[in-house]
Image 1 (spheres, rainbow, N blue to C red):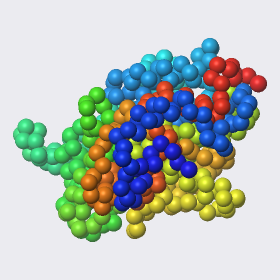
Image 2: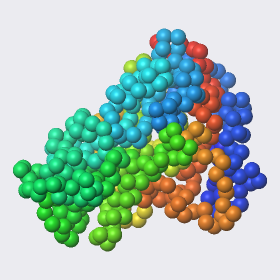
Image 3: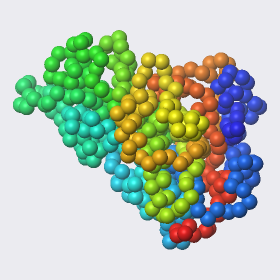
Image 4: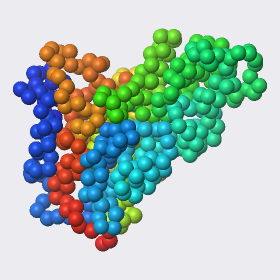
Length: 457
């Protein structure tokens, strides 16, 4: 039975919340996180294991940092995760929906912030699963986002990436919103670009109006943006999107727009123009099941490298966003439960998505599914537990609406359009004040002694 947010389910289910509402949850969690003994059946028993059978999945923004500012509890937490030689006592992977840099750069940033050596093999970016989309790697693809886009695309395996800037330079008449950027002299493109066969959305761009306009042009021309729009271009060329976060937490007092907001704009513009829904070939990043599969694989690889013989059985996903971190961890736990109950069945759980969509779960694509099954070793994990912290997007002081019938609305569900809202999936297993309290709690639940040296056995 889930603990930590019992009132959220009653609120979202249309029943009155208890007298404290959501306001007192973090304070209550602070008292319980590191002090209360784990309930029966959730600890590892009376003995302290020498070898970890669990792993950590850490979100970054809102859990470890806010913008570029480290959250004080982060370094304190990681001092408990390493031994005297600076080696991790438990396998750790960082799962972020950021997609504006390479994994190595993110690992270097984390090493500096946490004071612990972090390798790129411990980092899952929102775009990391694109390595498996090999059928697109030889095609000409348009990439949108910011940062070293061409470097990221080529690192992931794409051989012919084209950025929005390259497209704009080739067809300057397409970008007309900013009067100061309009071409002074009209000319035909010196070189024709190859036909674009897919659009890859890495993350939120800087100039939204330019990206929205040119992506729509590509979709409505079948990948030939220099030509007129035509309705025959529907169904449109494939669109692969990373990072569905509607908002994220930086240094400001309130959350900022994320890539999910940009996607809402793109989806609505496309529908307004064509009368049809924009379809995604795949959605990646949290809460996608595929992202958690890849993170689990990296956890198991760490354990193998450290020669920890016991299989990893439990993942603890620590995040600050109900609609991505908690939803994703609970969705993956639901997948694990069904997979384990089938005991060898080849059927796979499908993410619960809106009727008519085909993209919110990667298991609908047999080719990609088989690729992952071939490249990732069989899973040993049996559960994925969600832990919510109060240092980011989640606000424990949110007022409960006076009319609970208005609770379940699009304004409440900040998840992506293609994921159905299920109140059970946004209810965390545990809620704690910060990441340091999360580590304390998980050590208690696992009855794990952090001062033990688990390097060799």
